[in-house]
Image (tube, rainbow, N blue to C red; front, top):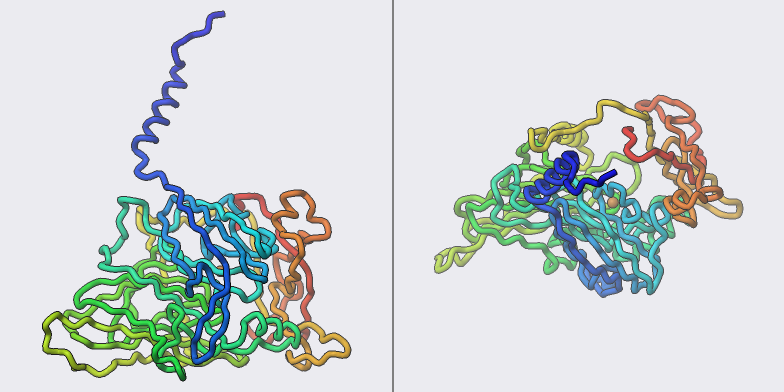
Length: 462
Ligand SMILES: [Cu+2]
């Protein structure tokens, strides 16, 4: 039996195809390295100085910039007393679940003095996302932008902007946010409200003792700016508007959308939106407020204040317009409870659905779920007084199950086949006790506590 030294035709075909791929694949992503040192640093806002937890002494934290297709290796080192984990909000984490970041879900948190390297690749996403702590309320100060550029040589589906600017909304507490949430868990009442909203960490001139802490965006006339809006507030949906300027939304949650013009945007916590701002042809020295405040329909107390930043047109060199020629323009935002604006705005969000960026919705569904998200109650312990409804404790739930945090990470328990005693795989796919979901709430609001999950094979369409 002789052995042919010539490659078989099948091998040749395979080999040439492989070579072809290497030569013409327009871009293989690169690996980018970041180091995040989580540590304390002092910040003074609203005349209150507080030691906050942030990354590399920056607030908001450092910007991650990568291209679609790149691999990221982010080493997070914990120098604070709290346990920490970081979530890369919106990254799809295809087969890199260990890097997703929710503490006790995909990983144990990083303990004091320890580090963890998040390792993942960006697949099929481009736009703006953000990163934030995913344990307790550390995300109140531990967050920053995550910019995903298209692959090298691939243009945006809109004209290349002159400049790109992240606009990150946050929520500022004069008190330690960890004390705020632990008090709420103890009393069972709603958490105390924040003292201000912020734009890029700054509350702006509408708050007491805050005028010097105002975000200013200096612009040139007749240019196009891409604003990368990120809502990193803890819990609040926000209206946002720039006086006398129309914005064009082009991307939401790192997915291109059919461009649409609007004076005001609504951005929910955790959401991101890229908008194009075209500056006016000539407005020397003019200043315009950009403001944000919440959209709220619930009954609880909430921070109803307004954060303002300033859009400032540069003055041409040697111009005579050294003094202000224009008043400060202020936008008019919808009413705090303007639900018709909210539904109308949401209905305008449409996938770009072009040949290059199709909307691939799975047509075959493997598993159906019906989730009701609610705020229920847990009974108050004896010898305690609770501040929730009728002396109970508030308890958030999905399908009436309120999540009990395990002490072993769920993914780890699953991976090692040691889920027994960590979680039960019996999370209900539909509400256990049906009620009129758009009418009167059920009489019994008491939730079931448990660490219940649904285990799905990889690639299941749900
Ligand atoms: Cu998130």
